[in-house]
Image (cartoon, rainbow, N blue to C red):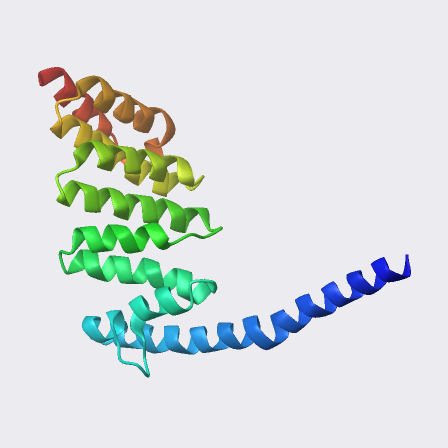
Amino acid sequence: IGVALVIVVLGVLAYFGYQHFVVFPQNEEATIAYLTAQKNLEEGKDDLALGGKSTNPGFKGMADNFSGTNAGKLSAYNAGLIEFRKGNYQKAYDLLSEFSSDNKILMALKFGAMGDCMVNLNKNEDALSMFDKAISASNDEFTSFYFTRKAGILALGLKKQDIAKKYFLDIEEKYQDYDAGVSDAYIEMVKQY
């Protein structure tokens, strides 16, 4: 029993030592670098916010160097959005795929942005799949409505009337407060195509 107790105590001490001497300093460094990149982004310095210099790694460098921290994970998301705005859709998709969070709305936005990347890469079936993930990732009604509408419009453009109709009927049933009757027009469009 004495040896087991010593092992448990050493394990607990090692855990807290690791947290105190490795994780906490890394989180602090990552937060400072994140704030610098965010400031560059707010000032319209997208390239500096994205790539930065060795003293400021930017969102890409943070996603690589601090991937175990919350700031590093969020940096992958921000870098993906910047790459998307620059028209680098595959890079954006790859960066966004590195992002994970317990925040369900952010995850829905991630999947939606990945869907937008797929649309721009002419991978519309994959885009529809990503929009479905975005719809189911969050319980937030507006987010779900937004991506249901996007999926419906994409399905309509792909001439998948039955799938489009399903999305628009979901909107009519679940998200009337956000729709203002627009889904009725889309349902009529489904009948015309």
